Length: 229
Image 1 (tube, rainbow, N blue to C red):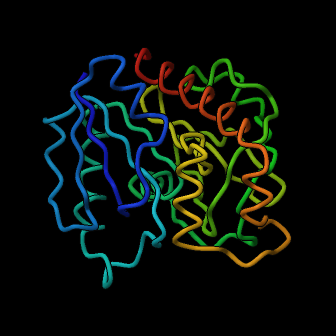
Image 2 (image 1 turned 30 degrees about the vertical axis):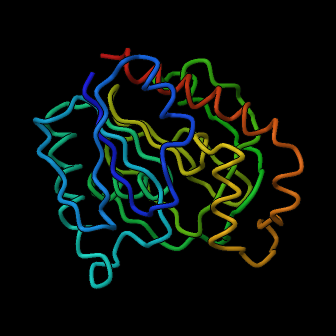
């Protein structure tokens, strides 16, 4: 499979997704949007992965490449490509589907439970996910649910945590791909102020086995997405 991924910051990579793709022998390419690289045509890949980043999806004056990126996402969905969005990526896909992203009532950083709903139990893309699990979060914005998409999950701090759109598009607001090493890199760049739903780096990194549990769910979602349709 030809897999292309979109990178928004040099310190936010594929995490546990990279070794999974390597183990399959997939052809993997990337666009470093933050470095001014231009994205390809949707004809050049079978599976598009849109990663996270620290920016807002409407900051065109600071990040003019956002417009080209959104155009590519629309093109990929229209062409029936498999598409996965993580955090910022989930917001960009929602926007491409016609749903806005807004500031969430709470910034959410750390380990917080996610509850899957009845629609999630009907989703082929999230098959095998437990009804409740603790996920790693790092976001301040949230997406609305586009027409034709299904809200699949929520947390105490955020009503929209995951959605699917047909059987080839999936998105999560949280970060199942992050490893303990990734988290350490992120905290080297930013230490969010502690709040009701913002934990300290020390607390987050106190039990690194949680990252492995999240990574297993990430692989489950990838396997579902690449075998669907």
